[in-house]
Amino acid sequence: MVTFLSGGTGTPKLLDGAAAAFSPEETTVVANTGDDIELGGLFVSPDVDTLLFQGGGILDRETWWGIEGDTHRTNSALLDIATAAGLPDGPQYLPEERQTAGRRLANWRRFSGVAEFMTIGDRDRAVHITRTSLLDEGKTLSEATERLASAFGLTIDLFPMSDDPVASLVHTDEGLMHFQEYWVAHRGEPTVDTVEFRGSSNAEPAPGVLEALSDTVVIGPSNPVTSIGPMLALPGVADALAQATVVAVSPFLGDDAFSGPVGDLMAAVNAEPSTAGLATAYPFADAFVIDESDDADFDRPTIRTDIEIDSREDAARVIRAVDDAIERVS
Image: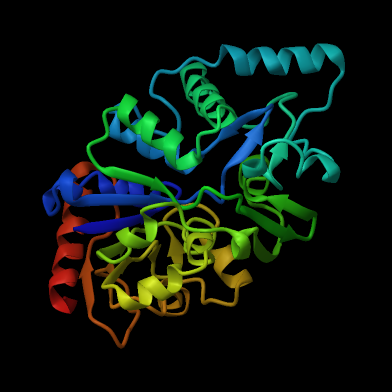
């Protein structure tokens, strides 16, 4: 049995090759929910959705988010209405007193839907409407995710990291921003002072998560700070990982990140923004998989291969390296 910790696009790309070593029946994925937001009253869970669409065979693999071939008529209409009405565009974080009103799960991450700052497709939106309606019926995020996973025909077990609110908030030189505001609206340009996982100390891992962490754990090439960090901030998770066999795949080619603001965010939390910094980010890791050209040196088993993933064949190659690392430390 193997459990993948997933966020952003790194781990999903790795999962494209999972079958090279692991069967779906023995594979569990725990998804980051620190990136979740409530947008125009709909609860959006981007990292969960990437896995749903990937498992359902409809993921847009050009962007690694959203549904391939989706239309965007509602999104376009929202922008047209905002322009005609003279309403502001860009992310509009709701007032502080509104951040803890309504659904508790959405605490500290509520945005207006006016001039919707995230581009959401029409079929994609149907998923958010369904999820939000299930939550409003009294289902937990885990229960809603299980229903959606069934609808998309997933053959792996998929768990959100928590059924409680945890918000990844980025403190920048331009003020406090939710991660989606920082990355989607501002393109990661503001200077990062620090990162906060608001609510994590009072949150609990979702049902099944700690049990899944008793299996061998693989951390894919996701952002260690905002994709994996929210999970590590949950009570009990770091302790569980310290007891488990853990293999981490680097999201860096030396000092260069594959994608996203990994380097800036690692520097903000006092970790070296390179493969070498993974020793600080993942002190519980038993082995690392890094690029063959990387000169990082660890005091733990290290497997080197070409870790750039542009195809299923690439993903399978890296998965075989992961399996090799697991065999060395099991």
